[in-house]
Length: 450
Ligand code: ASP
Image (cartoon, rainbow, N blue to C red):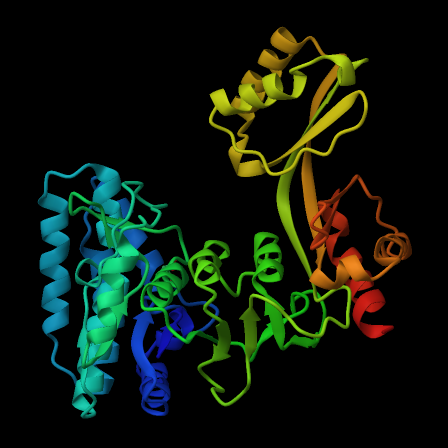
C-alpha cells in the first residue's frame, strides 16, 4: 500500500489534476491520497492558502470580505468548469466562511478554519473527479481519518493516539482522498499544522497505515544536492537517509517540510520525492539506511536570517551555571535558540532573526548585563548558515579541510564552525552577503572536482 501526497503545484489547476488522476490510476497500490490546496499556476500567481489568509485578514481588520472570497471562489470555479463537475463545492465554501465568521471561536481558531478551506475543497473536488472517471474514491475528512492534534492553531502537532485510529484506513475499499494541512483537537476544533503542512499529514497517514511507501509528488524530478537557484544544473540526489534530509531541510531545502520526516522515520516508511509532471522519473528515495556510502557529502544547504548573541566573561568556564542562566533568560522571554558554539570565556547563541525583534533584543541585553555581569555582550545580525551534509562524513578524512578551502577560495570569512559528534553535518556561520559565492565554491569542491 502506498500513500501519495500531491503538493500545491500538482493541484494548481484542472490540467494538473488530470495528471494526478493518471498517476493514481497507474498504480493500484496508491490507496490513500493526501492533497494540498491549489498552489501557484505561474510565478506571478498566488497560492489559494495565501488568498484564504487574505480573506481571514480582511475579517480580522473588519473590512469587507467579498473581494478576497471571490478570488478564492474563482480559483475553484475555473477548476470545476474545466473538469465539468458540479459547482456544489462553491456554495459549500461560501456557507463555511459565513459559519466560521459567525461562530463563537477565538480569532486564531477562526483563521485556521479559513486556511483549511483550500485543502478541504480540493480533496472534495479530486474525489468527485476520480468518481467521474469511474474510480472508486471518496473524500475522507481528517476527523474521520483520525488526525487528532494539539490545540496550537497554526502550528499544531499530532497526538500519539491518532496513529491507531488512522490504521483503520487500511480497511477502506475505496481510494481515500484526505485533505492535508489540518486536523482536529480532542474537543473537535479545527487546527492547522505550520505552513507547508500537507507533507506532515501525508507522513502521519503513511505511518498510521504502515504504508510500504510514502510518495511525495511535487514539481521537480528529484532533490538536488544544492539549491538550483544558486548553482546551475546541480547534480540530482538519488538516495538520502532521513537524517541527511532532516539536516538539509533544516537549512533551506524547501522540497519537503522539515517536520514531515519524523512520523515516517519512526515507522521506517521509505519516502520517495517524485515529479507530477514527469512521474516516470525515478525521484529521490529517503530511507533509514544506505548500504554503499561512497561520498562524504550528499548535499549543501544554506539559510539566511540568523542572529548571533555573543557573550564573553573572563573565567566563564569556571562559573558554574553561567550557560544555564543565559539560556534561562531566553526561555523566560519565549525565544528558542538554534545552536550554542562556545569558547573558554565566551558563548554565542545562534537564534533565528524572527525570534529576536529589536524590542526583545533590548530586554535580553539588559537582563544579561544585570543578571550575568558579562565583560561583553552584543548581537550580530545578518548571519547565514551553510551546512554540508552526509552520513559518509565520519568515514572520510579531510572533509573540513576541503570545505574551509572552498570558503577561502570564495573569499568568505568564517564566523563560526560547528560539528556535532554524530558527524552528519558540518555547519558554518558567515555574513549573508557571501552565501551564494560560498555555496558555489563548496559545490565545485565536493561535486565537480570529484
Ligand atoms: N496549503 C498549505 C500552505 O500553503 C499547506 C501545504 O500546501 O502543504 O502552506
